[in-house]
Amino acid sequence: MYYIGLDVHKKTISYCVKDAAGCVHQEGRIGSTRRELDAWIRTLPQPRMIAMEATIFTGWIYDHLLPHAEKVKVAHPLMLRAIAAAKRKNDRIDAGKIADCLRCDFLPECHMASTEIRNRRRILRYRGLVLRQAVQMKNRVSGLLMETGMSYNKLRLHRMGYFAELMSTNEEVSESIRPLLKLCREHIDRAVKLDTALLRSLEQDPLLSDRLRRLRTIPGVGPITALTWALEVGDTSRFRSIKQAISYCGLCSAEKSSADKVMRTPISKQRNKHIQQVLVEAARLAPRYSDELAVLHEKERQRGNGNRATLAVARKMVALMLAVERRNTDFVPAAEFRRAAAA
Image (cartoon, rainbow, N blue to C red; front, side):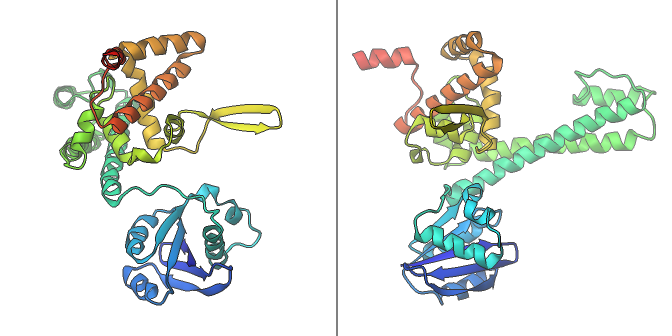
């Protein structure tokens, strides 16, 4: 078996090919294009395994090389301490160390979702960008009105009818900001339409529709939460336990222990921030739709504070969604499930 380490960049890829004994068989640099990758892969010995660090360029290279190797692995960048802490660091050395980690089975591998899931996940994350820009434009509208001393109804400002009335009837609106206000309003309207179109395309996707329907049978799980779970988590069978899924979603703290001392830190930064944000927001509203979650929220709130209660509800939602995914059935309330099991 030959082990190949790749140090991937925007324009170039440095590679190092080693055998099982650690001897360098081949190393060099190629361009980051499909044509050069095809020509290079034909010169390599077989059988082979390939590893690379996770970057913005990793996805298409992973997909392109997958048919040409026994395995293609992607390393978690934060876990590659040997590269980050090295005294000498360059592309050639990095590629060699990745090959060594792969050869010795020390590579901190991260999960690579299927191409279909990654393509749809890109759409969902683009929607998040659209919404963030829309919020910026709304804040800009408020800022422009405040700069010129304009009084307005804060709760109704971003409603289309009120904004049109404000622009047409209120003489206090300065002529200097009217073009800017119109541009901001047009951007907000486009963002709303684009958001609706993106969500509709994902919800009607044949790959996701059945899965989303099952997830939405859980009280408190809406379309955004279901979509984010399906696309950010991907294949739930990779989690051996609920604790692993909770850790991936960033709903638990890190642990530092030495000898008989154990210290818990705040919520770990090593998580999927997209699913974490959505789950926390959903957990704030979920107790309104589920008596079970409401009881859990109140119990944890009495033991600690509101943030602790919200995290407890979010962890419970992860457990429920994971159970629905594993059973491949609609959600069944706990009381009905116990009655059915007893019968």
